[in-house]
Image 1 (tube, rainbow, N blue to C red):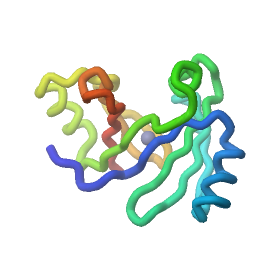
Image 2 (cartoon, rainbow, N blue to C red):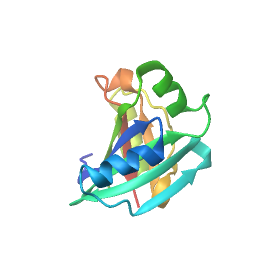
Image 3 (cartoon, rainbow, N blue to C red):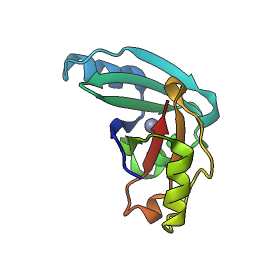
Amino acid sequence: MKPTHIEHIGIAVANLEEAIKYWENVMGLTCYAVEEVADQKVKTAFFKIGDVKIELLESTDPEGPIGSFVEKKGPGVHHIAFAMENTDQALKEAEENGVRLIDKQSRKGAENLKIGFLHPKSTLGVLTEFCCK
Ligand code: ZN
């Protein structure tokens, strides 16, 4: 298993509209997509920097994963997503290496990617996402 590149960096925000303004006005990037992912209880906004994307995540439900993250830790870097050849295969290999998984199987994420998360307790504190097309 080896990632081909960093697909995106996920950043939890308290207010998507204000965060988009920051990334556009201060960082000079253009938001090219806003998408709600009901399954994960988030609204996302995407920016491109070369091959890497920034994924802003605003919770649509205080009980959701981003809602509780922001409540506990405040807004900030939430996860790093690695592009893999095959998300399910990569999850399986990680598990065989003793990594605890959040997702045993890939599910559909923003931008129609197949995504799956590893547990940060098993990844030295970095919430790790695998994804593929
Ligand atoms: Zn992500």
